[in-house]
Each structure stands twice: as C-alpha cells, then as structure tokens.
Length: 234
Image (tube, rainbow, N blue to C red):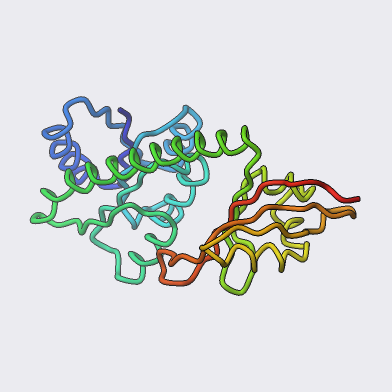
C-alpha cells in the first residue's frame, strides 16, 4: 500500500513515518519534498492514501488536495498541519478532505487512527460504487429507468435507461423536456400510473411510473421515480 507523505520539514516527516510504521508495517511511504516529487508520484500511478501538510514552500494543502482528487478522485487525503485555521479546515473538507489533524506532540498519536479511518471510508465508498454499478446493470438489462428530482421538479439524477426511454443523450437533454406528468405520477407512493412523456426530437412515449417522496440526507424532499416503457407514440 503506497502513501504519499507531503511535508517540507524533514523532522516532521521522520516523526510521521515512525508513528505510521508502528501501526501499518506494510505501508510503503514515499516522501514528497517538492513540486517535482509530487508530479512524478502522480504520473507514476495510483496512490492509496496521502498525508499532507498545509503550508508548503511550493504550494499549500488545498492545492495539493485538489491535484490529488483531480488525478485520483477516490484517494483519501488527510491534512496534518500546525498552520491551518478553522476556515482552511472547512474549505478542505468541502474539497474532499477525509480528515484534519493538528500537528503537535500530543496529536501525533491520533494520526494513525485518522489514516485508518480514511482508508476504511474509502473502501466503503468503493464497495458502494460497485454495488451501484451492479444494480444499474441489472436495471438496464430489464429496461427500467430511475430518476431523482428535487421537490420543485428539477431532475438531479437519472440512469442511462431513463435517458434512453425519452431519447435523451445527456442529463441536460432530459432536463429540457416537460416531464410534469412523470414527476406528478412519481409523487404517489401508493400506486403506479401510465402517463405520456415527450421524447427528444419529437414524438411521445407512454411510460409506467411509480415512486414516492423521500427525505434526502440534507433534510430536503426528493422525488424518486421508477419508469418503464409501455408503448411508443409517434
């Protein structure tokens, strides 16, 4: 398992390496001292985890985080720094940071737990994506479209089958259609409906729609719909 340790201070790198090697003897740690080191490491291939300082002579932790996530979106990143602020921590979390640990003598012992937690959450996200891909493949095989929309009717997500049913090649094309009847039918959790929906480029399609309104993780109401074709009208 490869970890990038990004820090200008050789003493801090040595302390981090010692602490992490005690808990993860199988961990291969590559020390990143300069921008060229980071560029070479990113070009070399996948990285399992990154621990980075915030204040670097050649960059900062937010920029490093963005570069890591751009190349390897699933790679967990832990920021270990003595110069960060609450505003920096919040900005980093919004950019995809997995954990934030204050760099001080009493907090070094917390770093292995932060790394372990970040790896565990990354593995859980990977398993969830695999399950979702299998689920999406199953839905596509049996011709079922799925979508999620905000309470105002704006489409947030849709699978490839949903796009295909109305002749859309993208989510933006799907959003361009008047799907009022589909959305209204999907609001009713007690029964399914057959409604007519427009297709991109003209024509209509009869769809069987079922669904319901659920609460999203942020507390807002979301319409979840399941759709299959009945017959096409041109």
